[in-house]
Image 1 (cartoon, rainbow, N blue to C red):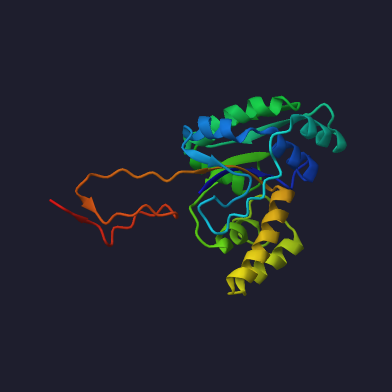
Image 2 (cartoon, rainbow, N blue to C red; image 1 turned 180 degrees about the vertical axis):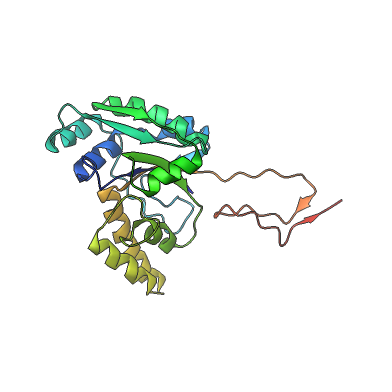
Length: 237
């Protein structure tokens, strides 16, 4: 699973890719990992973690405050701007991350306030594009299609950023109709680079999935999709 910042591409100035890239360059992910999830995570600049065969290791956003300021100036915001971050109290790590983001964004001239409503109100604001940038997480996933299609294809119900790129749509459609791994790998590698460059999501970190159980619990497996599967679990007592 990954924690990320979702940008509202239907609202200025976040409809400008240079602004989104500036924010991606302004953040320091390791600090966010430590503050948000107590360091029990792996920083990432794309959706897929290093434990997956679909990890493309495309990382163009190592922190560069000077370049971030240049991009804001190119976009017409040399003195920065004001924005609101939308975490939720449902997930405390999003609130902690927002507090760190607030400090990091200030270094490039962005004055970020924080609105952290409860889950039901948060869903209402996110689902109706009543936000600047929201902070949330997505479920543990396995196949490449799950990382790219549902949240980013232009006509999908979970596309809450307004991302609309016909070339990206063609790629994820092709990935769904191709069974050969090597061919799919090339398709999704291209889609990954396109998505990270366009930055409708700014990825922060992948959480470690940690489960605790007694010594007499047998057959339990920690799964990458976060599910607790008890089909083969038994108690040795």
